[in-house]
Amino acid sequence: MSRVTLIILCFIFFRVEVGAQTPVLSVADSLAAVGSHHEAIQLLENIETKNERIYLKLAQYQQAKGLDAKALKNYRKVLDMNPDRILTAIDYGELLIETGKLKEADSLFGRLVDKYPRNANFQYRMGLIRERQKDKMAEHFYYRAIGLDSTHQAAIYKVARTHMRRNKFSNAIELSQKGLQAAPNNVSLLSILAQAYSVSSQYEKAIPVYENLIDLGEESEFIYDRLGFAYYRTGDLAMAAENFKKSLDLEDRNSATHYNLGKIYNQLGDPEKAEQHLLMSILIKKQPVDAEFLSLGLTYKKMKDYKKALNYFEMALEENPDNERALLERAIAADAFFEDKKSILNYYRDYLDRYKDIGNAQMIAMSEYRISELKKEIHLSE
Image 1 (cartoon, one colour):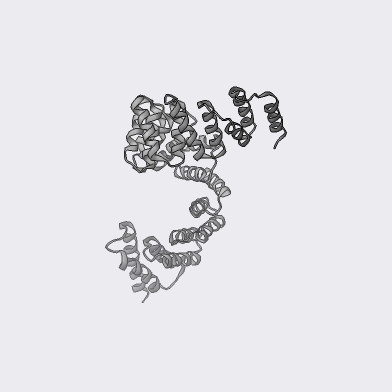
Image 2 (cartoon, helix red, strand yellow):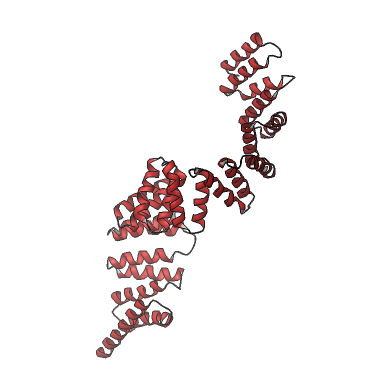
């Protein structure tokens, strides 16, 4: 027991008369204010004849202490004594939702909606209950909340998130912007807005929103990763690399981030760092990694190290024999590395035999042209 609590209890002993409930409530409030909820609860429970104020304080202290079942019983007692206590009804209903007693919560907020049909918060809570019940009517209540209060942040977020899930990105953008006019620093809506811009390829608009989130303290692997990708798509490779590195500072086992950073370093002309991150991506990833091996092959092809490029293209095909690009790139690397024209011809034929009728038209044309040229070279050399 703390010194403060002891002083308060001494005050109770000397100053509080038996049955004097108002001073007892004041002392209980003082105990709760210093975190002594257990002592405050004991004090109120020892009162023999309790009125609705005592039961309400007990419910509030018990809820703060995590004694939800007892708190619910005492909230119920208060409402039985005085059904018109709207704020108590709201606290009781929210605790019902929090503890998963959705049927009782639905009944309570349903009555409040009937009595106060123009209260947006009651409509929102009905939506929350129905959502947790997997009831499609949830969306109806969220829309009604917005209809009553066009700035209702929680309802706007719920509907905007639904638009995102349904790939209605323009609707998500419009609704998020509407909510942000009333609360510009609502990080939930800023996150929806940034993601909606990204998935609809509006990367220039996404960048300042992600940066705003970071300025508001929302630093995370996810935010930096999305920001890095947005910069990559706008062609700012330096800023893309910087943000991907910040993402890895927070979570260094993200295969996709290593992969994207590897591709960027390849484009920036730093093959050593490109290889480092692409290999990390491969080590982390548990599914087929043909794309990573293909990128490594392209890195060495760019450096004119055709032996290593050929090796990585082979590894890509071992991971995924259906990787069309890897099959053609293997032929191109072999063309540059080997001197035996007949062997090189077979690499191109391997590609064409498989993809002549189903492959990429430009890649097929390239292969057919090179096969024609190789045949001429072989004929002239014989």
